[in-house]
Image (cartoon, rainbow, N blue to C red; front, side, top):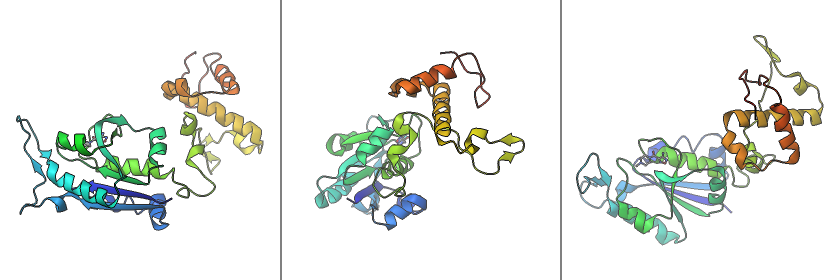
Length: 257
Ligand code: 4HQ
């Protein structure tokens, strides 16, 4: 049941502390995930261990050479031919919660992290199963993207989150944003916790939370609401929320639906 993650990178040190701390660190300690970094430079066989070169056709920057990457990938594949090979790139499919869930069912992921202008196109053609982006912005390399992917995927592996918690219960699972959370003190600089949360009335609290989640989602991420399959009760709650032009919990004006 344990998942293996191999990371091909020129900067293996980047991965040490993010994968050793907190929930991920515990998951690794417990043997639920096994993470290895592989330095692509170790697979450059020339004297100076060159891993990049100028682009054919000219232009700025450097391109990662195909041979060291090919040798690195093949060394992993020779141990396990069924490893699923992912290249992190802004040109990939945008990472979403359902993709993270799907990837968590793989027994062995191989994440390729590019630097510079990226990898020689033949790496993609010959070796890559899937290209994934973590968002529409440009990073200095694929390493942070790989860590984001590992983090999001790990949460779906049984036992990684506490036994009383599952990734399937997160509100993103229902395509809604989270409701507001509070802890002590009750009054901070005159801003009090909503009284309902102190009422002990669990039905009322859960109704309030659903309403706040819906309100927040429709204000901040209306795109999520169109995807969410809302229950009849939730549709009615939404209608109620938008009856009149009231002011929402964030002090932002609510648009009428
Ligand atoms: N990069 N999502 C360029 C990214 C990225 C992203 C990784 C920068 C690949 C060559 N990766 N290198 N956004 O910006 O995944």
